[in-house]
Length: 203
Image 1 (cartoon, rainbow, N blue to C red):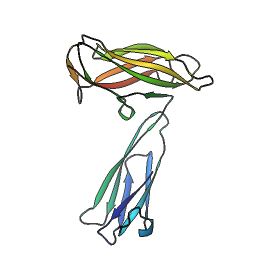
Image 2 (image 1 turned 135 degrees about the horizontal axis):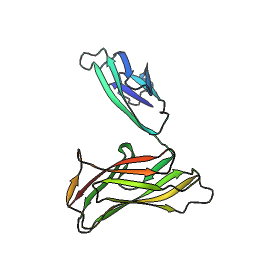
Image 3 (image 1 turned 180 degrees about the vertical axis):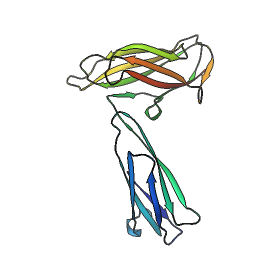
Image 4 (image 1 turned 45 degrees about the vertical axis):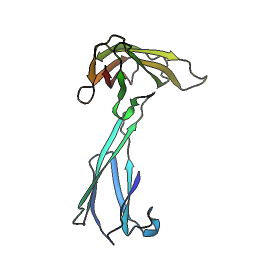
């Protein structure tokens, strides 16, 4: 990863310390010449370079980088580095936010219900992926998984994952600190339990 700290005001300043609160992310800096700056009006600045070491298992990566300077007005800058190490599974579809493992279903008319449809890809592990148990909050949510055809020789299997808010579901709001949750138990050796958050406004 790479970025800059630049000034169009100060003729010079120094970085006195730079640190990361995660052992997975290391950072260093180097002075930046005006010619090498991405902005023509730069008077002084530094190039920040970081290295991300992915965790052993699939999951989120998050680190806060703290940069301290000798500027009285701006003694400290903080920025966040976020990423994700993909495992043997990925999901594609509208309203899916991988960074938060979140399905955002939006507004749902209770009388009509709603089906969220997503494509789930899994690295071939020698058998079909099966959901052996599905625990949902709220309990009126229904989750199904169906295998889809894959191209010949494909190394990943495709599945249709459906999240069903049945017609006639009770009106309720599941957002912010009151999100729903889907917990799936599967036959995959590396994905024995999958946990997702769900937001929706059933009107």
